[in-house]
Amino acid sequence: MCNLVSRNYSAIALAAHPSIPGGFHTRMKRIVLYLVVLGLVLYLAKAVAPLIIVGVAGLVLLAWKRPDTVGRLAARPQLARMPARMRATPMRFAGSVAFGAFLLVALMAPMGADAVQPDPTDTPRPIAGGTTTPEPTREPTPEPTERPTPSPTAAPTPTPEPTPVFGKEPTGPTEIGTVVNIVDGDTIDVLIDGVEVRVRLIGMDTPEIHSGVEWLGPEASAALSGLVAGQEVVLEKDVSETDQYGRALRYVWVASDSGWLLVNLELIRLGFASVTTYPPDVKYVDALYLSAQDAAQAAGLGRWGAAPTPMPTPAPTAAPIPPVAPPSNCDPSYPGICIAIGSADLDCGEIQWRRFQVVWDVPNPDPHGFDGDGDGIGCES
Image (cartoon, rainbow, N blue to C red; front, side, top):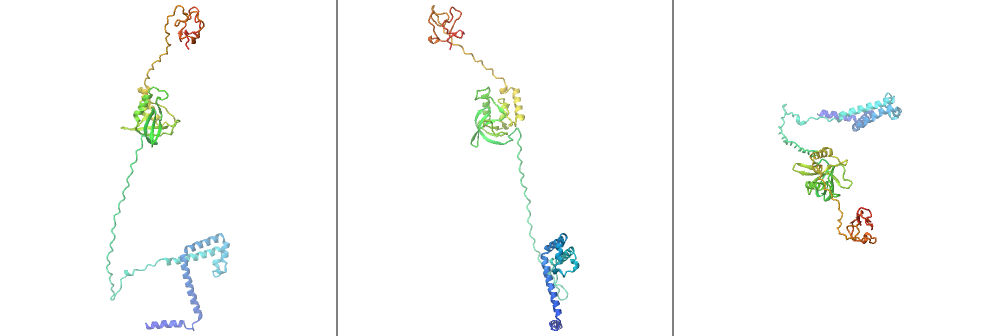
């Protein structure tokens, strides 16, 4: 040990002795400076490695597209120490720079890798006699008990709503109301959300009861009243909202023991209404209305049966002419009244009777001109 210390001290004293040449110190300083600069370059290059790669790629592309620009760069005095062969052409200069940059990046790769250090606890420690100290037995760390993952509860599948059956229930836009008045066999007043609306049943027509009472008009109104009066109804729209009179055009449905009843169709089936269409509101005409009307006609129901024979109105009769026994001096032209023969000329305003008989087949017929039109009745107007 003493000899080793003595040799080291001698070497240090020799290096510091003034008799050692100065050139040796200069070279040592340069070497140290180069190493420091190289370390800094490698450290910085590690941080900007992607930028270096992008830069040299751009330099090669520039040498290809703009060789004169790269040529001026390679001819700069600061690059005079670079071998002339590397600066002979712009592309060779760019390739040399790219090669150096990639080499520098390659040298940095091992520096970035983390050195795997052995765990000192895994290496047995030697003891005297060449034996190893056994490691203390480690107690096993209890593993956490895994909680059972609950199986996801299946979401209940919504029950699909049944599709409405055409002709058996409403299939179009609907609204609910209460019938408050029966206007006639095909028109009702319905209260909808507190507003009274007049509704005309679509696709059918019944006899009138307002502008002249037609045969079966009152019966059709009574039939409609028996179906919907005071009841809650479902009003189904077709295409049009209202008719020319401002009445809402709707199919009227009511709930019954056997399902839904289409009131429009029921009146046709009973023979109180006939099919009357106004396009485009013809939804149920071909499918339901026409066949129901054909069946009612075949059975002679309602308006398709025999109409009662009207009684003839008797013609008005003329007021009877009271028989008066004329005295012998009465003019025979007027047997119903007594006008003296040879009387001065009279007119109807001067006698009491009206509408009396005038006889023409006598001597001196109608001397006073009471029967101007010759129909045998005097003073009739």
